[in-house]
Image (cartoon, rainbow, N blue to C red; front, side, top):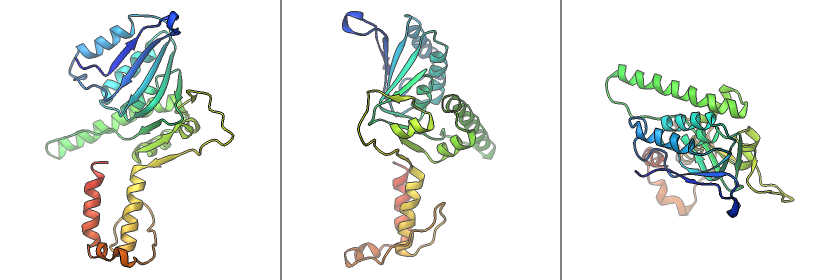
Length: 254
């Protein structure tokens, strides 16, 4: 079994007073939801020891149902859970991070939240069932974010709609994190950074619209740009419609 987690037992001689759990890579590389062995194995390993646990997360996310079970198991654990985000805690991994009694982030780490997604096939009834299911899954995810951050459901829902990326300082500001992994005492702290992938896409589309004159519907106001220079004459030969079509194809892979 290709597990996405790994344990390191505590060892006082090596300066490890707590058990350490590493969660790396995609969550549930092997089936979890349809496999009774995988979640039970994780639970058995979690409960095989006692005392506090340090959980290191570096994951782009994965199966939201697996993340929900891991979240519940960690919340039910008797010891204290300290989550440390060393690289990225995105999507389903951000849900697991919310199980920490204390959540710490590296100054160079990122946290990302977005709406759950699925693949559906069938008629309009099946499509509506998929939509209803995704709405319920989203509400359950928001529950975890609300308990940790104290933010309103409406604000968290909007952040998920926009696929929001946060650096450590922004995560601290919004309550997703409680502190930095290491003491970070520079005279000038880095700025809080949060950006939406959808907003970035819309800005880029608006720039193309303003330059090539093809109106499109967008959530953001159009950006007026100066006329293109001679260096961009060749690009201007392409229609705005073709460029936007290519851009939308690119968006599917970023």
